[in-house]
Image 1: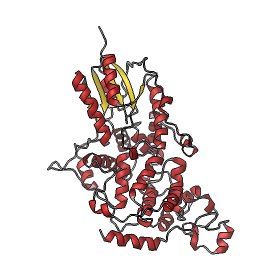
Image 2 (image 1 turned 90 degrees about the vertical axis):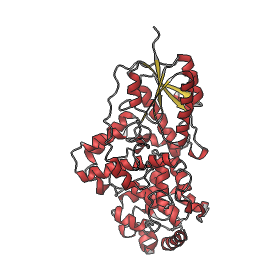
Image 3 (image 1 turned 60 degrees about the horizontal axis):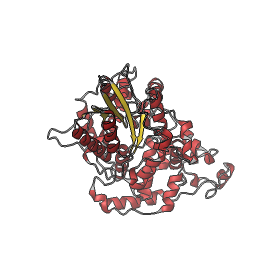
Image 4 (image 1 turned 45 degrees about the vertical axis):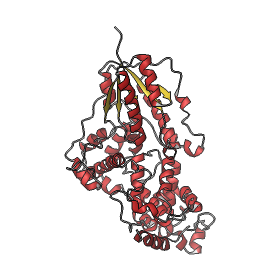
Length: 468
């Protein structure tokens, strides 16, 4: 009797543990594990260089976990799936849903093929704790305020993570000659290659990262997360984006940790913020490109390429901003508080459209996530849901003095200022010439002068925002 074969369609769930689609498929019998490189996103949202590098190593790790039975394909997902259905007489397709607009369309196209060929479609929510249609107001409309959404989620406990399926029978498509190297995901630019030396990638690395965070950095998280020189952030965001670990796994591990309630609740709230961003993208599918508040559609943004390049390269003359932007370039990551500071500076002091920041982060971050990236940039700009008030403009000098008071973070990424005392570290332009000379600094040569006056640019920003 011919064995029934089911496809497991991997996408943003590159793990075997707590993978509902994989577990369900394994219970059916023989599986054909499939990953299709089908970057169907609009040009501005196609994978950035850092995401490609991470994906390469993540697929390599998943391939090893599957004993070499992960089948890689390139091209249109509908076409690939239709071919596999015919070739192997597939009876079931199992997958965990994605919520980016084009990935939802991708699913719909494959689902049509399944309906036409009599293949059973099994979709699960393995990438989030709640599906976007699950947490709604009583009138079935969606929440636009985070706190209200968060409070509602308390009535929907996250599912208990499932264990790795045992005795899985994986099938290799020996007619397919595509290998991981054919995906051509590794950038030739040295600017991006150092990611491999900074991060360990894959499901096992994700579990180790979670264990380390709970053991060493969860205690003190509520306060410590604001200080970039401290190691109180989890750095789990790229693993979550690629699905090397599930939010349910993180939630339950943190929830049962022997740590103070305030620290646990502060961290779990950040997980819910991630859920909220996906939720908003699902209900407002243009979130990644259109202002949620249409009053911003006619905002007077400036097109200043010199300012933009200075910001991108960490050469603005504001040390905390420059430290953050250089951390991004060097590691593919930036501390969350510093992300808010550099975003505020670009939008409100340089008066540059949030799209420019969104696009730079998209290319440079290892944790580039459409929903998170879009919602957070709109939050800072004031154009989004539950956004920051227009008058909230982060002062990079006072932010540095408060949250990096010893200067460890700033000196690490802006070493040309390492000999400058804390008194002047975040405002070197105010230091006497003798102090600068002793520190080996020549403003305008070894380190840039501020590209804008903070007070003046803040005043202009407030005037523009008030016109809205």
